[in-house]
Structure formats: structure tokens, C-alpha cells
Image (cartoon, rainbow over all chains, first blue to last red):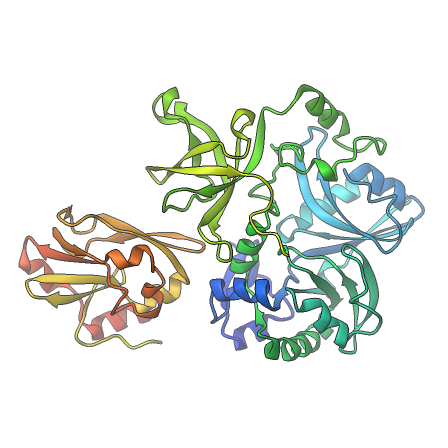
Length: 371
Length: 128
């Protein structure tokens, strides 16, 4: 990585907490704190965890034609959502491949906020600008915005106590503006862990104060700061896809099992024709969840093989896109693109784990579902 | 910075060795453990297998990564820590104790003379 890694406004706090920092998409980010990934993962499942996700990109689409622009850019019905709703969507290429996945926060027909993946922020903004109406401004506020996720069964009640308004009464996937610990925030009932929780966006200069107040409230509850390591294991247990692993330019949302976020009947959008055609023809490959049968861990990039087809490359029939240990549900799990014939729950997969074949079983639904 | 036990010998690949009769017990150092994070799987050879100095004899997997284990000396595997199958986290909690991995009977005893002592290994780690 050339040049200096970017730092979030909470970088000094992570250092003081003893975090192990790594380069992540050009950002110097905590991968774990002294508790370690497994304890951090369990703290989020059982209590509450704090995540600095300020590396993510935030922007606004504003203007008389904002609604029209959002309609064209997104596969989900973000444009017609009521004000105050947050909507998960894909951005697609004309081919149906995925540019990124993100959440649109609707304020009004002429005002939407978007939070995008850190590693795609530049690409997404360019994509928005290329396709936005001249009467829709794309306003990038990434550089001045901090984002803190508070996730876990104790998260909402904890934030509710610190916040103005009624955070506990907010339905999932809604958002509002308010104050938390005296800091002006966008409060969204969203997350990337499979747990209940909120994501708080505030100005950079308020981030340390907000984090401090949250940490002080979380510690007596058994809460911990959470690094990117546990963020990845948490999202994988909840079968939430990660762009660059499970989603990319070459796979469509239908193949990724995200058909629920593709509204083919909402009117035209970029990629609709290709997705409609793919749906009509049927899928040849699908993203599936699997659990390892053997004592082995299948990871990103490992091949799913059928040895009866021949040696070497001939045997490859699919690829693991995410995989690792599942700290809460146990064992090792993963996601893989496989031929549709192997996509049904119970199907057996053979995965080449660094030269050793291991078997796995396809499972349907999330590996972890909160009670 | 952790301190490394003075009674052990070390390799540049962050393994430790302890004389165990005529064999040498092998594990990974606290430095390696800190770098890896939570260890979730340890794959080891079988008793009786031959290992070759500098060649891979097993792997250790943490939540996020897979790392090869390199044989510090050539020889025959005389013991394997089977308990790591069900308790790989012992490597994190007791890297020099319950977290040991294998024992090797060296083919050539002089190979062990090339191993680092604690002072030399501490210097090696400081230069990393």
C-alpha cells in the first residue's frame, strides 16, 4: 500500500485500548483488541459491542430529481420507502453484476443518505455522479463523518438511556436524527452482525466523546470494543454477504440469494433487463451456506471440487467466497458459489483445503438467528 | 514485549524447542501466538512420520489466517499432542506448556546446535 494509511477520528482511542491494527482498504483499522476475536464475537452475541466503522463512506443524494436518480441506481424500492426508513439494496451494472451493496436512508423524496463499503467509496461516488440526474447533487461527507455501530442484545436499551427521543421504540431498519450523550447523531436501527442494535453517524470532532460515553455505558454490561476480525465472523454466522468476497462484478444478486432486495416490478433500474432475463432462464450457480463435516476450515478462494470430472482444474465446480470458524454456533462455516444441482440443503460438497479434500454440508438459512 | 523462557531454544520461524530425553518437544512462541490471535485449528503429522528441516510439518489456523509450521530439525515424530484437536486454544493460553505440538527425534544431533538461545531469539524478534 503506497502512502500513509488513513486514520479514523478514533485511531488514538484504539491505540490506547491496545488494539492490533491492520491495513484495511487503505485504512489503519483495529482487527482485534486484547480480548481477542472469539471473546469479542461472544460479547456481541451475549451483551453489547462497539465498532468503529468510520472508514465506511457516507454521502447524500439531494435535489428535485433525487428520487428519480435513486430509483434508477438501486435494485430495491429505496425511492418509494416512507421517510425515516432505511433500505438495504444492491447497485448493479447493466450486466446484473454488483457494483456494491449499501443502505439508503430516506429523509424525503429530494434527500437520501447512503452508507457504502469503505473499499468502494470512491467507485460508488463515481457511479452515483455518472448516473445522477443534473438535478440531483451527490454530496460526499465521508471525510467529516464518523460512524459507530453498537450491536448486541443489550445495545438498544443502552443507547436508549443515553439518547434523546425513543430509540427503543424505533422499528428495525428505520432512522432518525437526535442526540446521544449530548452528541448530534443520525441514529439508525441497522447493523451487520445479526444482532439488534444501532449505527450512529456523527461529526468527526464528536466521535471520541460519543465513543467514550458508549464505552462507559457498555463496560458494566459486559460490553467490549470489537475489531474487524469479529465483525467478519459475526456477519458470516448471520449469512450477511461481504462485497469483494461474496458479491462482485461477476455475480448477480439473484445468484447471491438476494432476490428479496431486487424489485423487478418497481420500474426500470440499471441491471434490470439482465436480471429479468436471468430469472426467466433460471440460475446455473448459487451462493450457498455450508458447515464443514471434517475438522478443517474452508476459506475465501478455496475450490469446490468434483474429483470424478478429472484431475487439477477439471475438478473445480465452484468456489468458497467466505469461510472460517463460527465462534458462537461452533464448528467451521462458509459461503460458496456452487452449481444449482448442489444448492439444496443437505447436499455434500468437497472442498480442496490447501491440497487436502474436506467435506461440507449445504445448510439453508442463517447459521445463527437471534432468538 | 514478552520475555522468552531461558531454558528453551528457538528458531527464526518463531518455534521453541525443549529437550525431552533424546527427543525435542516443539511448539510456537508467545510472539507467534500474539501475531496469530485466537487459534482455532492445529493440523499435525502422525507419530512415526519423518519431517525435514525447513519443510512444512503442519498448519495452525487462527480465526483469520492459516500459517505453516516448519520443522526446526529433520527427524522422526515420536509424539503428537492429540489434545490440541479438541482444545486448540491451549496454544493461546499456554504456548510453552499444554500448547506444545510434536516431539522430534533428530536424525543429526548437530542440527540442534544451530538453534537460537533466548537472548538471540529476543534480538531476532526485536528486529521484526
